[in-house]
Image 1 (cartoon, rainbow, N blue to C red):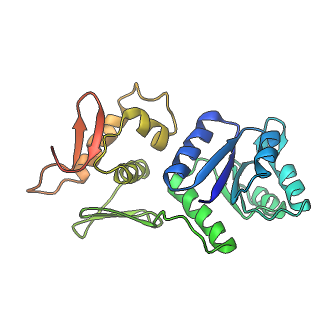
Image 2 (tube, rainbow, N blue to C red; image 1 turned 90 degrees about the horizontal axis):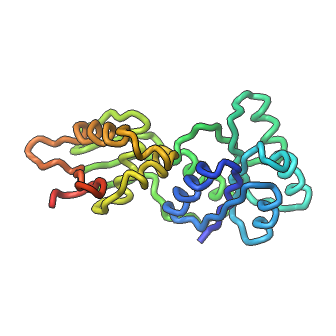
Image 3 (cartoon, one colour; image 1 turned 120 degrees about the vertical axis):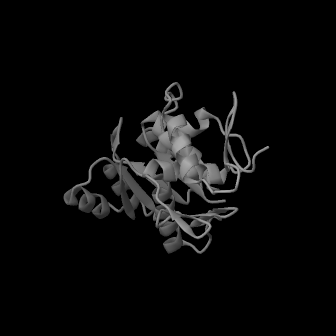
Length: 227
């Protein structure tokens, strides 16, 4: 199993990324500082997700040190800076790719697979297409089809459906959805998740069939046949 090092000082974001990568089949470890990252890099790491601004220094400076030390591990920069100059500086420092916050988890996974593909033929089994019964999600094109009919979803609705498909026939709690989709584990007291579930349920309706997205009273939600 390939190991991904996530270097991010925002605790909730780091935990969310680690959860998503672990769910996708990666062995994932985290670090919140350059010191911790350097220690983790001494182990067998297949790729690094690196925040530029860290409490004990610049991620770019550390990346340059890593490259000068002869380590060619793939590195994807994670930052809120999106200007051309910032991108050029990041790539010139030795990064393999660059992703700007906020970002979709599926895009991050696709970029990780891409840099690993360039370095190695051994890839995780996470597909680019998710399917459940007659529902098909293209994770790169971000399209959804059911019974050969296209379904238009907003970005958050798409991410929510992808999460539910990955956990098909399982009960998922609001806490799980808040962490993996909203990246906000403290947002479970709001009705935002329920609103999105109801909107998604309506868009997935298939006349003549029972709702495929169920609310399990007192527990959460489940994508699957009604029971």
